Length: 440
Image (cartoon, rainbow, N blue to C red; front, side):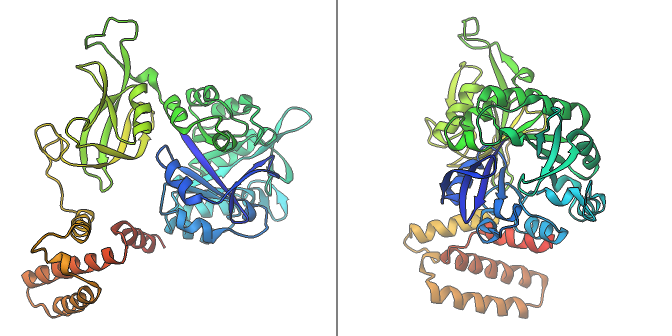
């Protein structure tokens, strides 16, 4: 799939040509990551750390909670990797340290083995950045592409595969040039290793992205994305495996020149995992989904574009779209505006809406924002809500029976959530912090 890159240097989002010439600079990392996350994982690269010139950790840390991130640049210890994962990173990109052993160039199998054992191979991406030598062979380069190792790309890739769930290949000669990716080494890598491969370096067209997808490889975009040469929406659609979709042969236009349409199944799910509905999408529906920000489908019976909720108002706001491992089915993480099923049910699967912690906070937030006559929640100002938290905490501690603990704990949970809401603290943040502690 498509991985958008956020490279950080000197506290700014940058794009460099050949790893050195500054082409552009921005200071809106949080805005960018929220946009990029709709289409796929986001790569956050600390260029200063990669080059041994400092760290942008304080800027990177808050970004890890906003998206599904893979993080790289100067990660040299298992402790660093564990800390980043505990803060919300999904994967860790390992570079230079993987290719130094006792002052010599080679595969640091001891380090990689320790890393895989401690954080799991599935969380590790090894960066096999390479330049072409005078004989036309690609060889590994490290230290922010400043140091040539002489290590052959293919041999190294095979040697590190046992420790990594994925390889990130960057054709350094083309990086930042928009001159096109050299597909030869990518094809060779695909033949020689079975793990996932993400390719980068010079990609400038959606046709290249589609070619990589057909090879079974993902693509990481930088310069082409920032300069507007490629849109993430177009890239996402091109990456899907439409050849494995099915043809819609129903509808009034089934025999027209535009039909039948190729469709892929798409499942809508809430942020807390509740299944809402299943539909089907063609290229037009996915494109419109990104344009409108609401989930669109292709109606098989009417053979036309259909935005969920266009008449009822019960839309599905798109938060994130992901493809499965075969790229022939989609999962849409959405925010529903109301009941989803045409019968008036919350879910098309006949499942009642679960009363989750997120839902409790949404109800409380609505009471604060739109107070109703007689609403007790609306009366909870800063002083009163704190007083109630202290009171209910004491009552939980003094409860004697099972039923009393349930009752008092529910009160404490409610008032604590009200306090969180008044302070602008979300349920997601608290759960993320608990997950961070669990991972440590």
